[in-house]
Length: 640
Picture 1 (cartoon, rainbow, N blue to C red):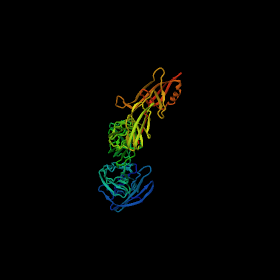
Picture 2: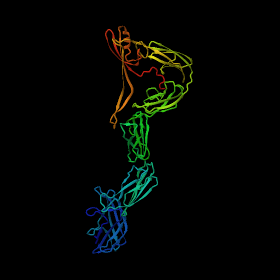
Picture 3: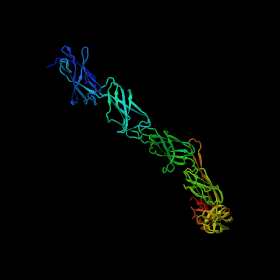
Picture 4: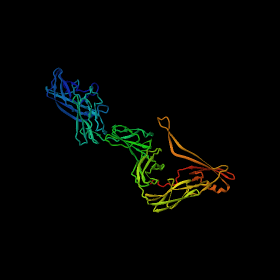
């Protein structure tokens, strides 16, 4: 039987309206009201009304019908509205929202009583019961939270945490409600103490001061645990919702900026710069610089920089001269160093530092020892007498001369790969000799040489022969012939026993040549050079040094590098008669060998017979070219 009731419904804060299913904010209390007429008069329900609702998704029931007994409040005036208030969060929130895929639909009805009758609304115009329905929206919640999971936070700096409030995306709230407060929480690991920070107002960020979080942890967690909106709506995070962070900084990578592939002046300041590259964007806390003088086989410290500066000034005279490599590494905010950068080549134009001398024993023929960097050659001197340049990296040298009793000055300097010499390092040594016996010397001239003989009293290991104060030979016998002298010379013989010696008397003697003579140095067999057709024999000489010019930025003229070596070439012109053909053939066989040439005018040359030219008829006219070399008669006492 049709009811005689009619009802006007008041929209329970459902929006939008007109042609669409309304959406209700389930996070707020919702008021449903009806003005109920029986005939021409309104009735006034009292007591409680029963609110029934069922939840559907896509036409299927996902929550069976439930009922709530709610008190009725009836307003004064006409029409009298009889209202019930459904508490917030009674209806489920639609996390998917309304759309083509179908969302949540709530069917509801309300049964009123208390005036002597019962009626269920909503009703249509004929008074028949209708289905009331609406959708729900998800409540505001936090999204876009930064830093995100797995991010790094610097425990030594202040960190800002941010979040956004997300509203339903399918239906627009006419006036979005602002945040009233939020609770920021953090902990160190799932079992760590939860620390809370209250955030007041609409600002959706929290600044956590430096040194709040523990250092070197990969278990730091944070979240926004609760958001309260200005209209009273509340969002709370799930108990297991946390965002994982780390305070362990990533390792940095250093990249060289300059110098790279450049020439540097070593006696001036030079600036070295690099970049600190790190995924977390934290500042550099330290940088280490190294250089290598042996193509990366070993590395030496160049500089250490504390702080964020990505350049350093290297003082003058710090780097050794030559071709070098340099590299750099940087440290992250934890002070942990990253990998070394790729090395960059540079060439430093600088003299090497003076070598550091070690203690010297005060014996007559001491060994000089030293320490040096970038050494490619060295030179030793004793009382101003030089060893000449000795190539190599050896760092000890026995003095070739025997020192007399008393004070002597010994020194050494080293040469770099660029050919530049260091300053001299010197030491004073007081020598005391203990002669092991005596040596009595005599001498006589022989054809193209001088014959020395001696008698020794005492025990000697060996004898050193000196010509004009320079050692020219050594023997264990009691005589020796000097084939390499020309003219009158002073001779001495030093008998050696261990570290000590006895020096003979001085003897002067002549070595006379009646004409030009020539022989290989490794086996004296003189070839006589007597004549030159139509004119006297000739010896001519050409000499020169190499000069290298280097050009540098900022200088208008080149810098000269003058070689320490002298090139000297001698040309001899002689003739051979037919009966001397055998001598001519012997001479030609010496081409390319080291020879000695002497003549009656006192000339003596030692070098390579580098060229022969001439012409022949009944006699042979020959031109000989001798290139002087650093050949030494006696080479005892080199580096040991």
